[in-house]
Length: 189
Image: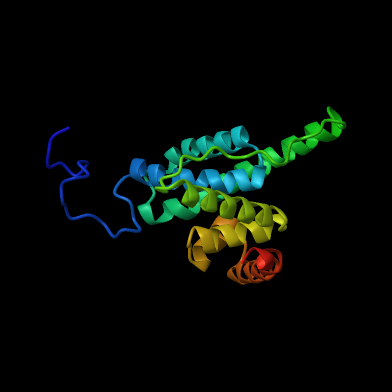
């Protein structure tokens, strides 16, 4: 790569606003870990979550000609649809092919953590596990609204596009999710 090109991360250039990535590759690189956490919370299975995120990223490539501002809601909508598809398939398989099969709900996620000390790593892991457990107790729409609005910090309009519902529905789901999470996490504070 030539030094001084816009793709060189160490070279100061005039870039778009921080919320709009310069390329689809940068967008996908930045959203990947968050998308995985979102998918894992919905699917409760590491490999399925990785597959869902990878599939969503591949499908987003077909929309690379869209304006960069539309990538975020489009990606989350694709990922959400993929998660729902995988949940339906799993339910079908469990219902008809393996009704007695037990699933391990307490699988831990292997995260590489940049926290400097072991105590900080342990605290962060416990906090994350507590949040994931609380999020899993929520209905799917409330979990999606909370994750997209609070954790991903998307605005109401973008979240509504991603979820395929009205802005009022997003606000209602978010309000109910916050209320339920507050009750669940009261002891954790």
